[in-house]
Amino acid sequence: MGRRDLFELVLLAAIWGASFLFMKIAVSEFGPIGLIACRVSVAAVFLFAILAAKGAISTLPNKILPFFILGAINTAIPFVLFAYALKTLPVGYGAVINATVPLFGALTATMLGLEKISFQKGVGLAVGFGGVLVLVASKLTAVENGLAIAAGLLAALLYGIAAYYSKKQFAGDNPLVVAAGSLMGATALLIPFTWFAWPTSPISTKAWLYGIALGIVCTGIAYLLYFRLIKHVGPTKAITVTYLIPVFGMLWGFIVLQELITWNMIVGCLVILAGTTMVIRSPHHPPSSTTKVSVASSTT
Image 1 (tube, rainbow, N blue to C red):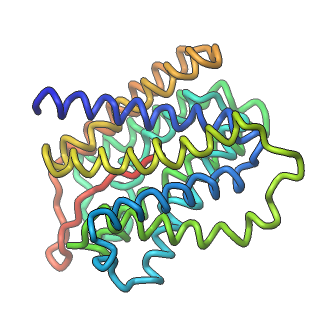
Image 2 (cartoon, helix red, strand yellow):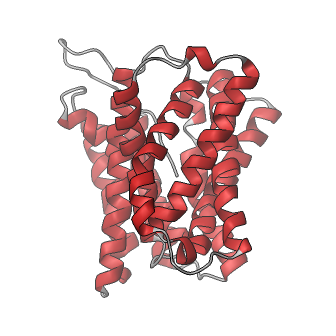
C-alpha cells in the first residue's frame, strides 16, 4: 500500500468516524428520520452529479426494485437506527457498535448456507460478540440505553445482510453506480415518512450544515474514496478501514463533545476487532452447491 493509499485509508476512517459525531449533534433538531432523509438525498444528488460529469448515467442498471431494497437495508433503515441510537449513546459507542458489521456479515453467510463455519470463524464470532457484551455492560441499566444499543446492533445486522444482497443482485455492476442507485432508493423510501416526521421547530443553520456535510462528505466523498481504495489496493485491504473508524469515533467525541473514553469502550473495541480479525482471516469453506460470496463491509 503506497503513501497516498494509506493517507486515503486514514482519511476515510476519519470521515466515517466523524459521521457519528455529525449525527449526534444534528439529530436533536432534525430527528432521526428527518436527518437521514437530508443525508441520503444530498448524497444521492452529489453522486448523480458525479455520474453525469462522467457521462455514466446511462450505465444505471434497470433494477428499480433491487435499488429500492438495497437502499432500505443498506442505507435508509440502518442510518435511521444509528441516528436514533446516537440520541442516547456517546459517539464512540456508536462507532464501536458499527465495527460489528463484519461479524454480522459472517454470521449472515453462515445462516444462509453460503459459507460453512470453521473453528476459527466460530471462535472469532464468539470473541467478537463477547466484546459487545463488554462494551454495553455498563449501559444496560437504563431502558433508553438498551433500546439504543439494540437499534445500533440491528443496523449492523442489516449491513451484513445487505452485503450479500448487493453481491447477488449487482455482481459486475459499477460500485459507484450501485451506490448512487441505492441512495436514490433510500431517498424515495424516506420521503413519505419525512412528511410526517419533519420537526415543527425551525432547524438551525448549524444543524443544516452538519446534515449537508453528512450527505456530501460522510457519504458522497467517502464512497468515492472507498471505491478508489478498492480499485487500487483491493477489497481485503480497503476493508481494514473498519478497524480505524472506532478510534476516530471515540477521538471526535472526546475532542468536540468532551465525551469520556471509558475502559468498557476501549476493551470492548479491542475484543470486537480481535474477533473480527479472526473471522476475516479464517479460511472460507462454501458448500459445494453454492458459489462463494465474499464479505463486504458497509458502514455509516
